[in-house]
Length: 153
Image (cartoon, rainbow, N blue to C red; front, side, top):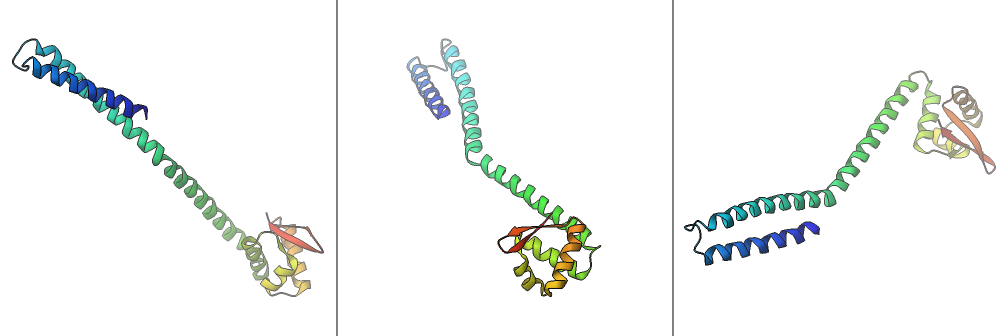
């Protein structure tokens, strides 16, 4: 906003200098040299104000978009690292443990009853697998009503 006001003032000043130069019959008169140099300085100032205006416009409208883009890239990078970490951990697990851990990662806080259905295991097998994953520090269980909720660590 401030740069627009300054630009208008500079335009008015340029216009008045041009009128004064024409009234004196400038560019052939030696008295016009001062006006011409002021006019050149004014053009330079107008260019600087235009640059400041363009920069402020960019910062107001596009910097926020870049900030969001950088945030998204960091989240994607974090997710990719998490996926790579999971792949490394999964190498040391059996098929049942991999299945349970994958389901828990997809739905944090899943109840054991729901996990039972999604993993397609018996209640005893699921309990055994969860105990093993807890000992390895990969999952944690907490009370949730009459059942337990399972979270990945």
